[in-house]
Image (cartoon, rainbow, N blue to C red; front, side):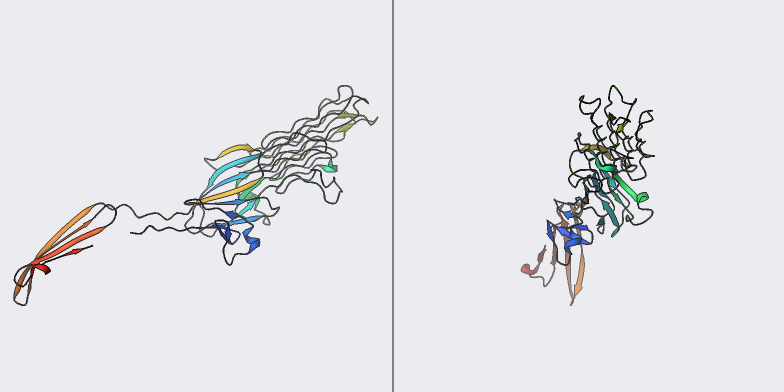
Length: 376
């Protein structure tokens, strides 16, 4: 029997993509929702950052898919910080149905303000797509956006509740401060926290600084990250803000890092502090990273790579089961035209499914050349 083979493309955004080629009838815009790269009996659909919601349509016969989601890292402050990392979550989504639409959000990295209002276009103060919190007034870095797969589009009220897998984004870095007793140098802002980790506190001026200037807390499985706390000085500018459901917090005033997006967003860092004599007392805290949602049996880690979502599923056609070798025999007496014939039949099937057999007849009128036949 001939082996049956077929190639099934990635069904994404209403388009079917196989071996990197757009099939006839599929729109170019829809194909941008995901590119498929069949490998053997597995099709993998890769979704990169677009700044918009993308879709994946479950093919007929598929009830589960394997997903790898990577969240975006947080942005740096205008003076630079160590960049934070997004989460990498791997897990299976089960209980799916044919033609079901899944909505894919790939987190964005922090970026500048094209209008120049909040920060320069080349800075990283604006929070990334899908939940990254922004750093107000531009000195700090914005939080990275989360990457997730959900069953309801982002335009619906229940969209966040329908998320099946989430990779949290990293927190933004806190802004530096200057003039800690003139001539003593720069105070370093706190680094943003990796996904699932709090941001670091800003560096304190040992002479006039308040007691602390904390980074924002990390999002958890049940709540947003806590606000970065500031010292007790009456001259302090502001603390950070707490993260929310799906969104990192924006910083309160000057320099605090924004929280990363996630299942629950990270808190923003406390802002930089300047005393009444315009001497900076403390640098701003970094934003906390967002939390992640890991499907049962899945894994959670961190990634230095770009945000992305990949969806894989099996597409091979199974061979029929191997046949059990069998032989059957039979026969009898046939009367025709006053003559009697003895008829014998034998048939066999091999393990590979090949069938062979023979029949024979004996008696008056059965010429030797016509006495048997082989059947294949």
